[in-house]
Image (cartoon, rainbow, N blue to C red; front, top):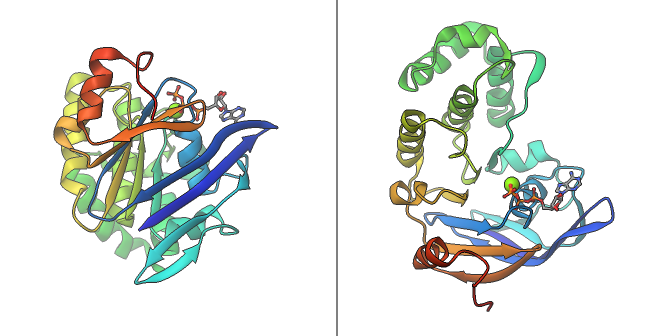
Length: 247
Ligand SMILES: Nc1ncnc2c1ncn2[C@@H]1O[C@H](COP(=O)(O)OP(=O)(O)OP(=O)(O)O)[C@@H](O)[C@H]1O
Ligand SMILES: [Mg+2]
């Protein structure tokens, strides 16, 4: 269980999240929707521990084996080790770092291991085959010059490698062509099971046909203005956010 209680966040003196409370339970999926600029990506960044997002009020706990851990004060890499993962809306390039080395170091950090070149090759190659990613990408700098769809596949590869539990998907459905969308969504649906939880941030609700959610949160100006089950999405699709009756 990941509990967020009254989370408030500032960036450069501007309040962008205002007393947000949410609970994410393993085995359940969630959706966070709202107009552009309502605070959805900021929420994922703050939970992951991005240093730009200054927490002013906070209770963020993760429960592992009945042990409650306060995430405050933990670096993003420590949060990642506890199972939190964010698939970025805008996937960054990392120059001068080869994809193979990047993947090997996140794998070793997660497992507290030191994997040899050959052993890691044996781990990564079958996963790349499953995702139909050419082995040539391993020799390239992380995401440098990769297309949007290729970057997405590399993120899914990281998901397969790390097997995180609380998975924030920030608009993973945008910028993909029809076929890439279908294949990405199919891969994501396969990765979803009762020991993890997807938190889907989207403007294109088609993804929910393949990965249904148990609970929907609507954000506006950094606040939750309404929540409910997936039927709420149907209302938004018809009426938009403007006419929504606030809770
Ligand atoms: N690093 C930052 N520096 C300055 N302002 C920021 C930063 N990050 C977020 N903001 C501001 O916080 C608000 C919320 O932004 P955020 O990216 O979370 O919105 P969003 O709901 O994800 O929007 P979209 O649907 O367009 O992706 C916006 O007004 C944005 O300009
Ligand atoms: Mg966003």
